[in-house]
Amino acid sequence: MDMTETAGSGDLGFAIASRSAAPGGKTSLGHALEIVRRDAGGQWRIALRREIAHAGPAGDAVATAADIAAAAKRENPGPPPARVLEGDPIESASREFQDAARDAGVDGALRAYGRNAGFILLVEGEAPMGLGAADRYWKRRAAPGAWTEREHGRSADATLGYRAGEVAAGGPRAYVQIWQFDPKVANWGLRVLLISSAVSK
Image 1 (tube, rainbow, N blue to C red):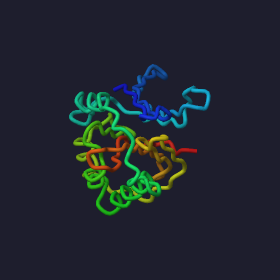
Image 2: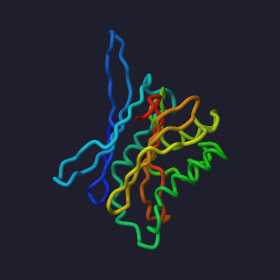
Image 3: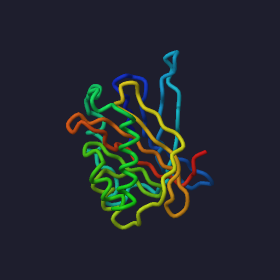
């Protein structure tokens, strides 16, 4: 899976790319998530990069071609209306998702906050998953503990934003949440959730 997407304002975007390496003759597969921001000179700069390693697709865990196509073909929804931009709506959505994950499990939180079209879960040790596979994956696992945010950002038009930090999930792990405005419900949905073994600095 390789995909890129940018906000309508053209100042923030993200990319998911497959990667492989062969240290000591052993092939290691995985995916990298990069969040990029356009600087004052018009150049794209990496604001954040996280990677996961996995053994490759297994059963129905891999994100389907339809998941990826929906993500790549989605049209720019345009900026959110002013009435829903009070405060920090992406921070609020993230906090509500984290509370729901603690209280109802991540599967329940994803059913409420995950984007139906194009949601991608990137988690250490597993191939990328769409929303249905992610729901099944989290049903078998305990809810994570506290989420500690370290950095965040959003596009000028507020259609795209991210939160990143550490989450207590069998030990501290790095997380990234990418949120995207959905005009159909006039709210922000979780587009990408990454949980990797490397703790962010």
